[in-house]
Length: 345
Image 1 (cartoon, helix red, strand yellow):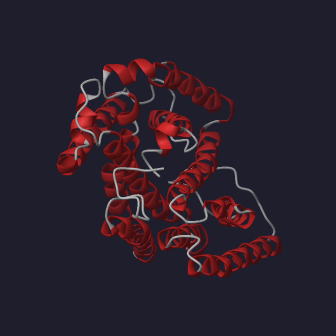
Image 2 (cartoon, rainbow, N blue to C red; image 1 turned 90 degrees about the horizontal axis):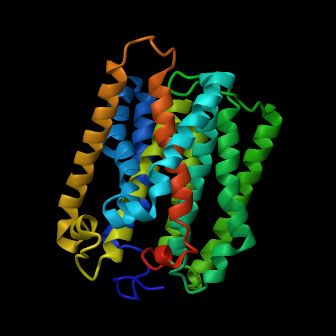
Image 3 (cartoon, rainbow, N blue to C red; image 1 turned 180 degrees about the vertical axis):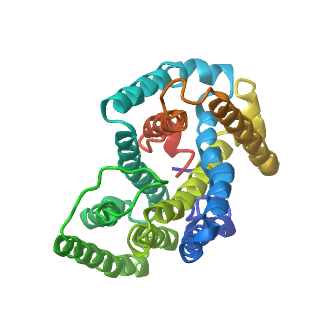
């Protein structure tokens, strides 16, 4: 698979600086921020606000560059834009009336773990497909350790019964300490085994250094966010920063490669913004859209008469937006689709 970049480039971005920033600086920044907040709890509100408005909301709005930036895209994706949000809203209202806010918070926590892990797998494969031996990307050990680490770390996180998520309670999975420690040892053992094999693959030039470093970042972010940081909300903030920037970068890369031939009449706005010299304008437009959309949503929520509906509107609205995003992402970013892989790998 080829992109606008030289075939000799072993990364998915056009320059080593961008690739190294994405692979090394990003997870380091997310982890450093999380540890800073963990040790300075008074900074949490500020960091959370910056994360939400500059990254979190922005990353969700970025999705719509694929499905709603022109008439053609909206016509092709009408189901995602109208029926699907209504279906998600109906499902959330049903969950709320069935079990209350706790069930929505639970679905969010568990689904988010899966969503983050799936996105990370997609990025790892995009880098992995640049390797000499592409079969190693689907090697049994590779697949096992890739998902074992997030799963075990996640089980550690949700087995802490004294934690809430952003002040909300959710349904925990209670695991005896001996089993939890056994799972962690197993996961660390697999990670070390993978590392030994991966060094051999790297020395033999079967995988690229970029892919190797990405995998190290993947393991590190989960071990730190879900185990080392024993505050669930701060751990979530740590991995959320990593996930958000990762996603924004992938969407930009996809659009940049898709419209590398120039501005297209049918997709004028997004193709214009995706030209090489328009990256700052691209980001500015998406930030303006983010502030406009979410600013309007918040104004609408807080202007609604308190207690009139008996519903926690903030939870309902934001759960709808996030769950809708999870579903769309699971459909439009499949690497096995040629239209996706040829613009990312």
